[in-house]
Length: 123
Image (cartoon, rainbow, N blue to C red):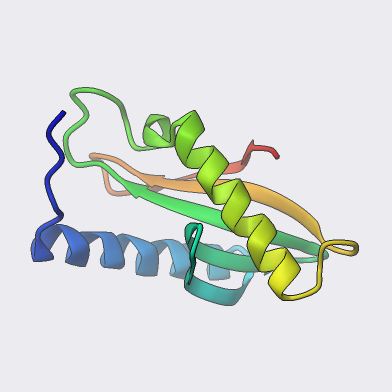
């Protein structure tokens, strides 16, 4: 199987999509807790607070949809990695007993408008 590294243009496009997703979510009343949270288990694009819920957000950008659209590209394996990373974040911040959490996806496809999928998957 062939895997290619992301070019600087692709990284820049991804960062722009994350910034657009952040602005969109803030307009919806969510508050930024963290952006690009990284640990040994993986990365979470955005961690937001929505009322009493901690929201872990995966941002997806697809310019070519030959295989799957942006939302469909969040595979089961990717979901599991996000969940493990979120659990690590909760443990690191001593929130495992008290936090109400959900996993959302913000998907950008051809039209450039964000598709917000609340509670896209669960742990």
